[in-house]
Image (tube, rainbow, N blue to C red):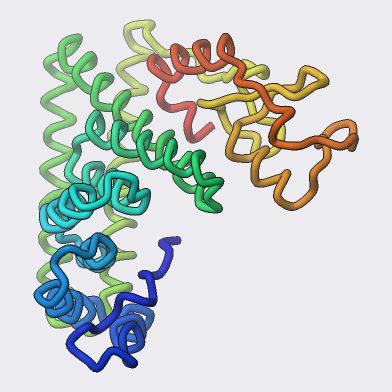
Length: 292
């Protein structure tokens, strides 16, 4: 779930006392086109305000205007290179455009900015980091499979074409709809269905040539709070390791060790560098583990 735009930067074309009200209401109502227009007017009056560009980037992200979203994020970062939201939205837009390497760099920058400020969005950003790692692996995996089997590449491309045809047909059917959320859900459902078919095809070929990868994640790489694979583990005083974002979230609610219930603070956490390296190497070869 995306955070709402910064309320204090709304429709600057209105009187100062109305700033924020109109645009935020349009955004919350799902009227992203109007919200984008109002943010554009606001930027014309205050082109040095990084939050305005960040907010417009978010509306453009909801409209799937990925290139424009990236432009806004980069402009916001140019004005404020510590703007976590700008890097967060930038990473999502880069993933949408199938640029996982760039997305991973942006997501990691957003993640580090979260840690600096103890931002409550740290866990969401951490999940985006893992998603970028997964898509980076998928890109490499696709190339590996293509090199291994020309037949598989041909079949996979055929599935991609069929998915594109179905998405285009869906787009024509959805033209003129007032409720864009239904159209977006239908598009996501179609994409998920075809991606599952592609994964099944890859599995069949992997079994055929004996190249099926292990599909188990070592227990020591699993976070005991979220039960997901870790990418930035820290260790507590009693020697237990947790994903940094999940233990920080736990400590905000209760300053105790999740296992022993003894007092525990952020200052008691230390990076588990050896485990972090092991997790990085594992994810680099097994990006599927993000969804384990």
